[in-house]
Length: 215
Image (cartoon, rainbow, N blue to C red; front, top):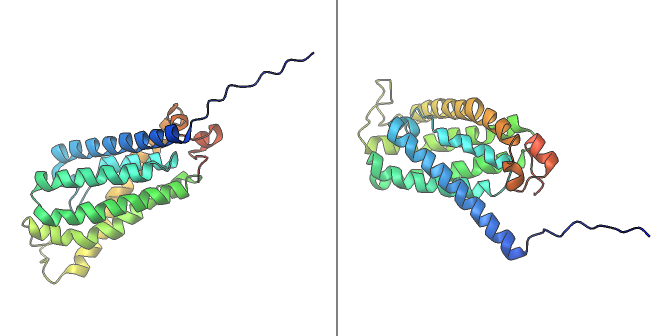
């Protein structure tokens, strides 16, 4: 007589799964916000200004492993940008960064998740989203805190919106590309060798390729 052994059922109930997803979102949001605030304290305007290297954007690679990274990164970005209003003195103009900076991070993370099977392409999402969106409102913020010329030039901000947008497109895109490909891509490769992808819900094959099993 052959005895069949069945693996124990370790599937989570719907409420447990929902709680786990919320926990993932909260942890990712906290990590992004904390890393951004540290960068703001030590790098100042390099974490949000016209030439920026927001190192916390490297955490967008978490969207290679879980869709919870999308709301998590967006929430963390919103929290950090609200804090930046106080730290940088942008006042109510800083709400532009809260709204549209958060939108850029969310769109970039969404693109990363949707293209997670091709990590090098996936990480282009945050680069393009930030390069296109952030320069659209940044001139208003710069004028609000006392900038009257395009940084590193003698071109007045008044009446120079197209030039400022092009400047921001290039500098923001370049800074984001450095963060995503110099910091983020190696980070994603390192994370695949840990248990984190499995903890976030990626299957074994997906973790090896930087992909997840959920759509």
